[in-house]
Length: 71
Image 1 (tube, rainbow, N blue to C red):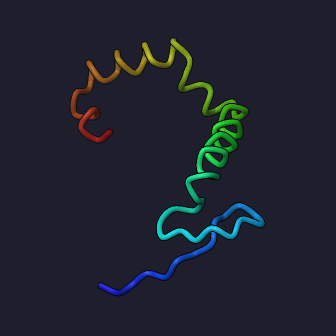
Image 2 (cartoon, one colour):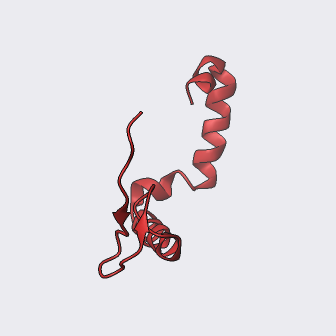
């Protein structure tokens, strides 16, 4: 197992060095919030939050129990 080099934070202008992930702890929450806002605007992603989809999914998984093992 080799050594992994430190990288700079993915936020432009942030000099923090990180070992894992793409952002330092200070900017990680901001990056996650931006990603969530992008997803929230996507109609396909919003479909999975709708109560009708959740009800259909529960019905389908009861009908096909083998499919629940895949997810």
